[in-house]
Image (cartoon, rainbow, N blue to C red; front, side, top):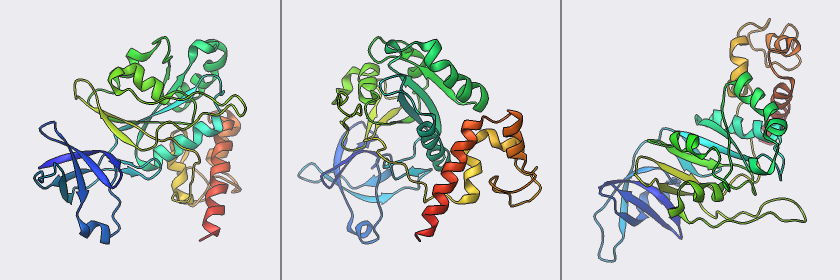
Amino acid sequence: MKGIVVKAYNSYYYVQAEDGREVPCRLRGKFKKGRFSLLVGDHVVFKDVLEDGSGVIEEILPRRNCLIRPPIANVDQVVLVFAATNPAPSPVLIDRFLVLCEHAGFSPLLCFNKVDDSDIEQDLQPLYDLYARQVGYRVFALSAQSGYGLEALMACLQGRITAFAGPSGVGKSTLLNRLYPGFSLETGGLSRKISRGRHTTRFAMLLPLEDRSGYVVDTPGFSQTEFAQIGERELEACFPELQPYLGQCRFNGCLHMAEPDCAVKQAVADGAIAACRYESYQQIFGQIREAKKGY
């Protein structure tokens, strides 16, 4: 039988079969020897249910994409959730999440939660102008508490596998509970002392929508972002607004850092590319270069 891995917990992989049943399965030994990491979202072929109600995964079908942190595969899009306030959104952190999504081949959607605690016009308009108008991402302002903006987001989830990710304390699990109350995910508030959230999602789960037209993945979130897996020449592809200027630099191998006659740097100087986004490019490039020195 074929199915999709919806949860991995305590050495079991819970597979949603094509007939709707959820079957706890163990991984065939040959995969363990090969150190193959089976991820939530993987499509598999598993053996008929055994006497104890469990199954054995016999084959792992090819992936379209995968991301190790959080550990998910075959995702169509990622909803990056940030708080409109408390904690205030950080463009630098937003850019780091966006780069990881772009490199992994995921289509990112930006969501700013808790708009009922903020002045939407004052707090979010600059972010909307930057990420929606200048860069071209889909941006949503919403509130998991009041329900504001949720209908537009829900329409984007139909027929897709969507991962929810973002920093701690921004309301990812609360948002999912509001969208689909049947999920009943554990939530946690902010630490007053450090104004950071407590992780309430301990493992990645693939959750079917009520009409089973798609799935969502509630992930443990990113505590740190790492860029060692991204090559120096690959980074430019992770910034959509750089694409029109690639190939126009004086040097074919331009990295858009210290090189003269760089079309990207000229676009920044002309205001065609936001200076803050270029600063994020420089910071991440520096981290990639430092990471390579450790190998």
